[in-house]
Image (cartoon, rainbow, N blue to C red; front, side):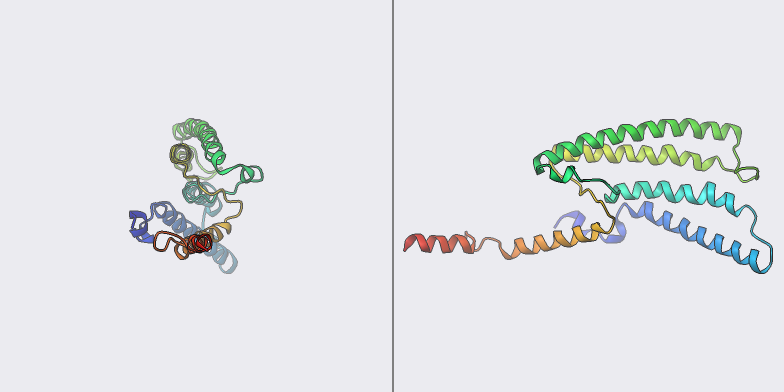
Length: 210
């Protein structure tokens, strides 16, 4: 049994990204709900709720989501042409496209780093408020830098080992793909070789002897 099969589900590396994103999402929900209730019933809304949501909550959720989606292979893709390629060709197409995607992400990371440094130098705030807004700018180079590594890893894995990641056109397809993999594995176990040959091989040998 492989290490991946033995590893508990709660030890998956993706959770290092997904758990903080979920925590921030719930914090945003509670913050916005509290602001709405206080504004409605006491006419005392929480200060700077819009600015905090726009400049802090949403960037954290979005950029952590980019990394998590790539790690799980759940970015939505248009695979109309890709799915028609032979399996041998798919690995090289995926490798080339992954390298191109890594190059694009590297460009975004480089540009984002310059913008983040500039925002820090000028002490950027959220709009006309006094809410500090420059730290989330560093999420741009961080997230796209991580995605550069992810895409390069996918390219090497596809080209060197032939292991390709499913291209998902709908996030719900992930569950379907997992079920199909389980069904195929179960079918392989049922139709495995028995006493040196499959049942079909044994029948063919009997027919030949007759």
